[in-house]
Length: 66
Image 1 (tube, rainbow, N blue to C red):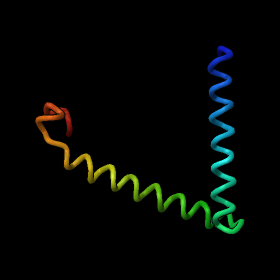
Image 2 (image 1 turned 180 degrees about the horizontal axis):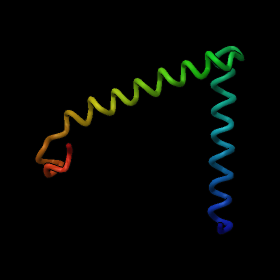
Image 3 (image 1 turned 135 degrees about the horizontal axis):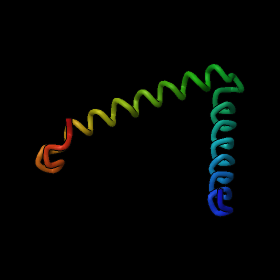
Image 4 (image 1 turned 90 degrees about the horizontal axis):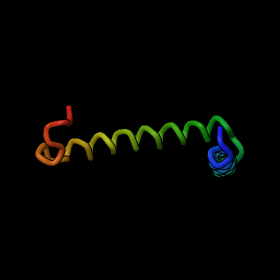
């Protein structure tokens, strides 16, 4: 692995760790509550993504959307 890639991955890992700690702090230190909030937010984003994909014109995707 080259040095630039390693630096990028280390930076991303640090940012992710910071996000995890922030989520736990927002949940009052309750890890289970933080995970629950994260899973709910993720499901919302999955559903929003599906809703937006359904609104894309078939002509725009040139029929490539299932």
